[in-house]
Image (cartoon, rainbow, N blue to C red):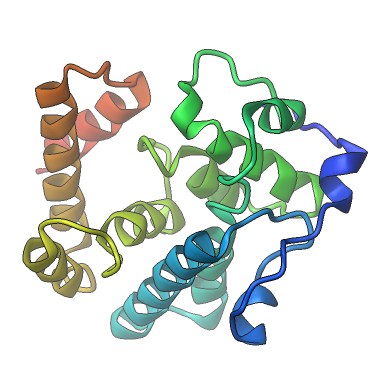
Length: 202
């Protein structure tokens, strides 16, 4: 996927926010997030960090998960014109343009881990080429405790992730596909490819 280097996007700083420096310091200078978005990103990162501890992964792997978590929505609060300047959007629907744009921006600013970049790029839709950074981000983004609706079910899923990652991923993806079907929303090929991979394993 092509990477853009728009000077105006690189020079943008996050707007002033009343949050602890430890949260804003985790965002790159090119990030553009509102306070509510920062709260969401911080919850996603905290959940990923908790799962890393509970799964006993290495420090290096935990840092990969953190980079993916902190970068995944770094451009979600900007408009489509600016997003399109980072990378061609192809047939991606507008609500998920922020994902490939953030991956392109991260790569342009030095992120070279393809697993982290794939985690960011495909986090709204799924990807059958993910390593654990992608799987963890997909689940943490969906299961972070600040999201409205089905909180008890989400909390139950979240509690099982450290010991049942693939099983929870199947269940969450099935729930998301069912929601798309009920709404009559087209389902991306990447989403179906991930489902087929997980179903074959199951």
